[in-house]
Length: 541
View 1 (spheres, helix red, strand yellow):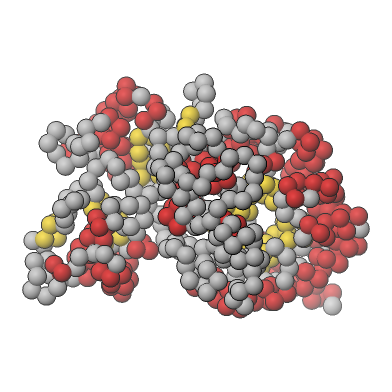
View 2: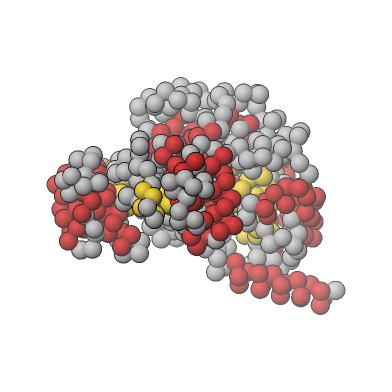
């Protein structure tokens, strides 16, 4: 028995050595507030098929944990809110809970985190003062079982634990009723145990709760935008999520804890529905008159966030080097959450039948990135930075009068082209898209600065290209020109035909974000493309 326990600790120690070296990861929150979801075994196969390597569950369901065994998928389990008081009062209860619900499944099931409660301040404020004692008892139980290095203890906190206003982010502070009494001892605990604070952050809710015209949709989604600046020459934020993260970092610093890590245990965007809860005016439509909760918006937000984390770009203006795990909420649409038309039921990446609600990818292919100008700095600073870029490696021929990318003839468009050329030519190295605050990196191709084309990436191989080519031709691309004997059949290669089909699909869809990806098989370029004797059609051709 003693030998078996020693081997268990040894295996878990080896697991920790690997996990401590891992970069930031992106996973999913797997809720089950529904009566029509697939069985856990099928769900695990779905996770594996889609390359999802982290999952958070809201209990310790034995069937779920057993199904996740020997998959390598990292799992965060939860002490439900209703068990929190017992865990706080009774160390023996916490020990038995950990032994039964965590230790019994290790090491086959890769449990790496325990969330003690979920949004306790929001839903069970009567338990506020019992939260840190419960976390402490659960941690002490892990110590007794020799598991404290492999499994960390935290608690997910809703973003509304911060007091208004949260912009500028430097004003971020926790609410008075929890700051000293709960958050300070919690952060002390997290620091002492080398754990991390977890937050549930939804830019969608901030966008929906805004006074009309305050927050732009692109800013909330993380799409390219002009950004919002801090006062007194502070940083410019082009992502509402970044602003909310930095507000949390500042709130932690305000209590004296600048070094505790911050992870996101829930973030997502609904694909449909209406908001029924909340006392303030809630937007059903966006700033352009479209529905705020829509498939297009959900796809844009989650795709931006997933790609960002996979690319390792988890830093913020205030914490540029921060690592951060993120869990997308949620894996499934859950039909028992709220009324039938409530947005709460429609945060899922998948419907109950395991079909994607929209396209996304968790695959770890290197994410493309671009450098764009920040219009807020003004034309004079843009011109100085543009001159520097063009004189130090950027190819600026295309933005000269009469050339392909001269239009639109604005300072910000020309600067974006020059900055991106410099950034790409420097291998997208850190620091090559700054220009003293005149530029920032984005992870979706800009669509409003220059004509652009979509071309195939030969390195993915012919089989991948063929699959993507067939998708494009079947979903709007005009592929008649690459049929035998037609104008663009030659050169008769997979990459040439795929480039034609991808570009046709991309132009057909208005060069919208995400329409030149094909799971890594396509990429956007900004110079006219000629393949053999065939010129790829430009926009509006």
